[in-house]
Length: 389
Image 1 (tube, helix red, strand yellow):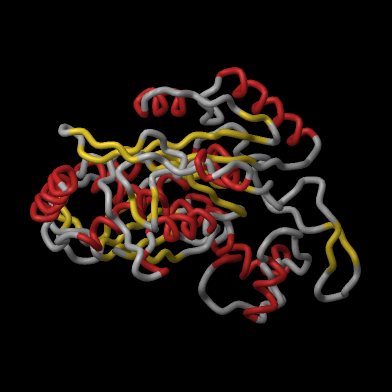
Image 2: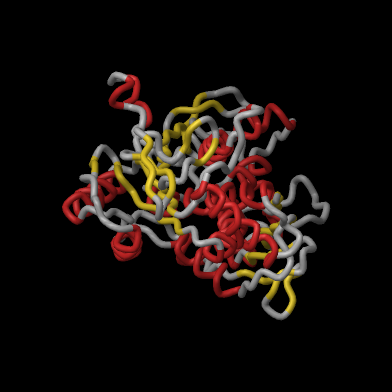
């Protein structure tokens, strides 16, 4: 399975082309729209989320509620496009046109892709960079992840995402079922499972907004139901945990990732890191603990997958940092674009969907994936073989 996205933040639409989904998988647009709606929620979001009401248009690859096995084409319209048609239109224009000059950007924002992208592609107007490097693109990735989640649901695999930290406010660990996690996460404005921490996180977001600043945090994704042996140890690029790690840090503003106890493993002895193996006739092999977060040797081990990602504060600040105008080389306060003070809750949904994609892609790579019914049968047989091994 693979996908490509296209489109700019203020262009007419985002487009997703998905290839490799088995034929005959039941899916409806509303399942994708539910994920898109989840991404738009969250305390600390900016005015853009009041403008856009993301819904998907299925333009290919699905007929009468089932996948065809051919590439799936999805389109998400940008409602804000009507205000940007002259600025972002594809037609040639007079370089001195007022609309172009009005929105031309020559002052890069610290922490953003503006300057590096302009240097790489030779853009004197850095709007050409920020329009694509914008986190608006994650809507397209959530749409792709929504398709993957449908496959995982039929395969008996559930995912949940939640926030464990915002602006230094840390949530207490909640030893509850995945169903309870889903319920609490969806009900929380900051997707936090800890009610006490939730209030403090919202206060931290309010404080940052009042100061013209932004704050980051940590999100966690849990997936239950993955069978053991998905991924491989034989080549570096076939390790499933490495693919998930790459997917997490590919999300805008994410700067780190860990599985299970993660970096804490550097502080404690191996006897307190590795998970002892047990066996039962009903369940087969399992682990007494899950400190490694569901992975050993680049492969799933049948335990819940637990992965966390850290998101830095959004670089667009209403109290901008110092920058340099690329035309005059003089110091200026960096350009201000409409933005969020905190997007960590929304980023949790994005993380959930990119993890879903990698899990589904790992399953499709391993089992017969032309027909969905045959795929599910192969997966079922693999689970039984693993139990009896």
